[in-house]
Picture 1: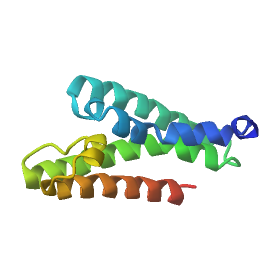
Picture 2: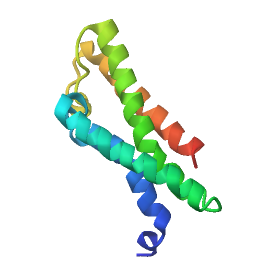
Picture 3: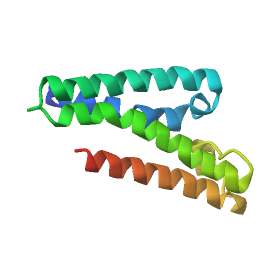
Picture 4: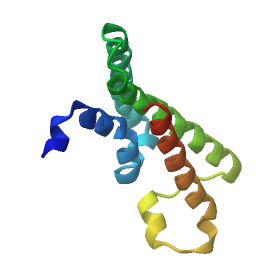
Length: 127
């Protein structure tokens, strides 16, 4: 298992923190109390990433993935706010969209796909 001996693997897993929560427990990102907990964790990761950029500037890839969770959380909240503003309802859970093929869920699918694509692009840009 050489993949887990590389420290960048752990940084990548931490960078995908919000995406995993979005897939498994989207209500943690929506409810006020759980959102504050997730926000505090992402701010802590963000601060660790920023501090490690200044402590050891030769290592560039590891701190970048620690900055991604906060940016992707803010991106989720922005996309959700726009979705609620225009459609006047909450987006569906991503797992519900896989099994529910009703025609009225186009905007929910577009929301989910656009969020995944933008976070993936963010991960590629910060690499």
